[in-house]
Each structure stands twice: as C-alpha cells, then as structure tokens.
Length: 195
Image (tube, rainbow, N blue to C red; front, side, top):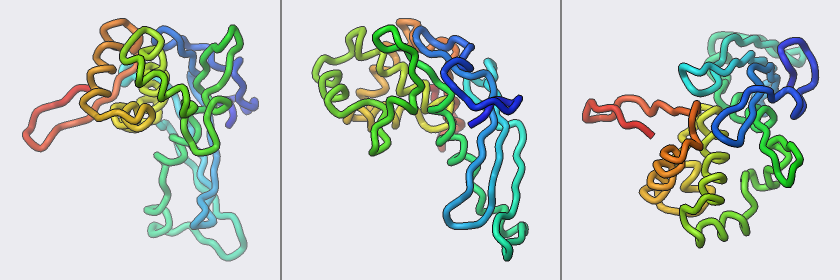
C-alpha cells in the first residue's frame, strides 16, 4: 500500500473525514500478485464523493516469472475487486481510546473487522449509539471497497439481513453514514433499491 507519490501508507495519510468517525486516504496505489497466476496487478484508486466510495482509476499488470505471458485470457482472470477489497482496510482510520488505528490493525486473523465478543455484545445491545458507530465502521469499509455493505453488517454482527437494513437505516438517520453510499443497482423488477 502506497500513496500516489510512493510513500508507504500509514494512518497519517487518512486525511479525508467520512461519516462521523472515519477518516480515509483520498487516494492510494495497491499492488498484489494473484496466487493462481504469476501476474502482478497494481491499481490506482481515488475516493469520489459523488459515488461515496473508492473508484479504480488506473490499472497496470506485469508478468512475474520467466514463463508467464500476459494474454487476453490471463487478463480476464485478474480480479481487481479483490485487490481493492484487500487494500481498503489499510486506508480507513478510526480512533480508539484516543489513538488512531487503521482498520487493518483492527482486523482479526479470520478477517473480521470486529472481534467476536464485540459483535456479540453489540448484537445483544441492539441498535444503540455504540452499536451504530460499529455499523458505520463495517458499512463504511464494505461500501468503500465496493462490496455489499448490508451483507457485511449482517455477517459481521451475525444478524438477519432485515435487521442489518434496520440498523443501517438508523445509522444513516443519525448522520453516521454521511458521504458513504453504495448503489446496489437495478433489481430484477426494474426498481432501484437503496442501501
């Protein structure tokens, strides 16, 4: 993870406030090598307020290894969304006990943003102010990474999707999700569903 000018990404680069408690890096560059191919992929990403999330602005690919060639078939296998999803936690900062931390520093070994005990306590407490702050964190990270945030909230807290939607609505009404959006697109019935 690097800034666009090549500096190693730290919490200090998260200068853009988002929602009520998040700060994000306005732009970054991420590089990864897919495990199933010898292609190194670099993405340049920028946050856009209109979209309310990070957008990939540029990509570059490089063959690593002596026998690999980049062909159209190989390029179809490059998963840019996975690179973006893996990079976003390094670019989102929250403050805990007065100390700024990247979401990556909070993420558990099994990929959860919230420790299991915290998710359980929050679920038991229901959609109170502290829980809604955590909803903001989970929703924000998922939306910024162009992943379905409602599903992320439901999974992270171990709650039904209907309950997650209710909690997200309460967080949005409380102003916790200002500047964070996720367009789920057109549904099979032709209507747009907001999340």
